[in-house]
Image (cartoon, rainbow, N blue to C red; front, side, top):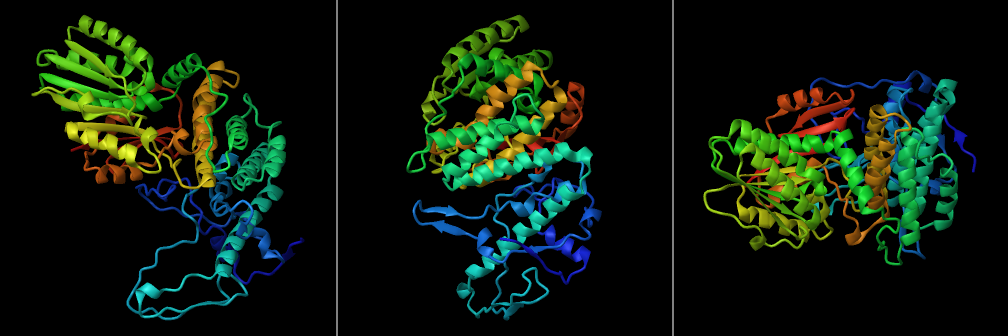
Amino acid sequence: MNPRFITHPLSSDQRWNHLKAGVNGVDSRFEVCGTKRKADGSFHMGMPAFLENVPLYVHDDIHAHTNIKDTHSSQDLSLSPFYNQCYSSVLDNPTSSPWNLLKLSNKPFGRKKIKRTQSMPQTTVGDNSLLDEVDITIRRTNSTNNLPKLRFRDHIWAYTQRYLAAEAIEDAFLENGSTEHEGNADGMHLVQLLISCAEAVACRDKAHASKLLVKLQPNALVFGSSFQRVASCFMQGLIDRIALAQPLGAVAPNINDIGLEKKEEALRLVYEVCPHIQFGHFVANLTILEVFEGENFVHVVDLGMTLGLPHGRQWQWLLESLANHHGQSLRRIRITAVGPCVNQFHVIGDELEAYAHKLGINLEFSYVGSSLEALKPEDIKTYENEVLVVNSILQLHCVVKESRGALNSVLKIIHQLSPKVLVLVEQDSSHNGPFFLGRFMEALYYYSAIFDALDAMLPKYDTRRAKVEQFYFAEEIKNIVSCEGPNRVERHERVDQWRRRMSRAGFQAAPVKLIAQAKQWLSKLKICEGYTIVEDKGSLVLGWKSKPIVAASCWKC
């Protein structure tokens, strides 16, 4: 099928405005995957010089890019809704990384909220529309309940035009790029292969997916560039999904599960190398210190004890701060760990009690050997006249299920404990969408930012970086990509979604007013330039070059 050129009636600036319609940028002033972030100033994106003479393509047969229903597998082989959102930052900066193609949203494009009125006139989309040569008439009646739906061909044209516009931008970029940008072109080709393979896997086209995986393997390298390394993790996730897919869509656990010792070592390296967990500990401890000011009996319930991180690092820092500032008033502190890591909790408890004894603090450590889903109100013992705080660092997303019953149950138990504050730290990304392809693209964008940060912090052949990527982040990626049902536990959600969940559970937001201290703390770490901390509707968000990574928020009953 050969495309033909047509002459577009619009000026170059108008054509560019059409091409960039629906594109989400990395700027925090725009919606990033459904989350509006505040910032000052305005943003303007002009027509790139190399697109002045780019023609639009129209295929003779639009069914090459339409929604198709496979009657054999009952699988929706629909065109993926991300092509219209992938190219803004690349055009703004042609020398940028190919990962900047992945500025995505889980919202299907073209869907806008229409304010319904009592009477709406007939609307006609004519020749000046993006849908050239097509006259679409939508008739509306006086009844708001009888608004007609868009016809099938309307959706076909919208999807086709946006897809072809994105292809035109990509072709122009590749044709006009100089030889010094060949590395970025290779990276974009790798991204395209990953996306195509993910589409094939979503459509259960194993034959086509297998061919694409063969093309991916030579370039998806563990010790390659940042996009080659992250591609290797996603490629493995796709391989696992193909191999373990069941007839009804359920996927078994990862057959290549790594050993416990490697996981523990990788977790320790993540804590030491990346600021993600340390950021959560810093915000949580400062909040807890404020709550404990002037109190005699205090109690901390720690959900998961930060994945069983050795030595109880968060609480050693808290004990030291309590000894320096609250030594005279504080008479007893209780720490209760909740989670299945009983052996780690026992060791951590002994170390914390010995450390507290050296500081002259009366510490009582206990643990509840239960998963969060099986937690009961009577498992956590509380005493009168003690101030209770609940601490959750990267834990609650694991109990977010399709039914939402598990998370609601945990939040109900926490609410019954009536803590003075609940500190919630979670990954700020949307990896729990209902559709596989949307989750895949969101995860690809999110983890490419993390791997880019690791690229700036550690040398290329540093074994620490390989362990962090392959034994920690790769495990998260493979769980997101290859698993479904109860086996998929890495269900990260955006901070706005957590706000809605917490509000429905009866919690009220307690704004985190620590932005100045947090920025000062980040500067003292001296990790590398690129990490930022911003305030977002009362929450603190740690990001890498405008991409949110981890968000910390506080809640009260």
